[in-house]
Image (cartoon, rainbow, N blue to C red; front, side):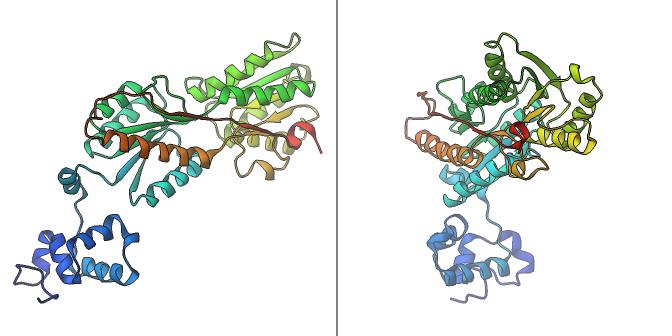
Length: 360
């Protein structure tokens, strides 16, 4: 057999690139078709030398694998879809990286989508992933998507809610107990003697934000002389935190909160930076500042930030592992359309105390 010419073709490569098959690649590389398939989907099974021979064959022939055709033929997709509600968030990259590591270890691929906070966009991505016949979906939703995910399950597409606990017992989810996390934060401020607590947050439509408000209020309501003020910001960014601090600094000292619980670390970092550089408000003497998430930069700000630590990498890894369990269940011969009580994993956050609430 001549490895320099694909099977059944008598002309040069240029006119036949779109007709090259996996059989042609196998013959060119002098391996089996199963070995070529492993090169694309389970490369760790092959030696370096074999991978290099197949790589050269693929490049020479211009072969492009057709995963859609493979999915239709085998019923198994190598693709996982991930819909994030906030790619710009400081926590999303760590969660996504953990998911990617787990997906890659299964010789599968991760497609990420950003719904930009839009419920409509969220559903459009779910429809797109359905059309692409992905094996499963991990989604950190803005809206209520459980009915849509149940419909996908009936069609054989597994799913896991990430960063939000599912309402339906049939929906798998991985979340953090944000009510408990907010309680930790506000209880810490109350124990320091703070009584005028400001809650700095964007839209309460996001379940995680609403849960943190609920947890904060559950502490405030038990303290007779405590007051609670919701301080709205347009977004959860450092810039929004800076603008918020500027507004608070213009108030009379008696009209300011004596502590701020920020719905995430980015807001808190912006607030601390603005207060310190402006010089009119001292942290924590005048206003103690508490963040949420314990991102990488929280401990290296101009005043190290007290915060609530949530397990981002663990959450991402758990979401991926749980999705693989759901995929395995749905691939059972009689599983599609069958409902069961799904696993709902919930992590417990941890209080981290630094100088922004207790000083140096």
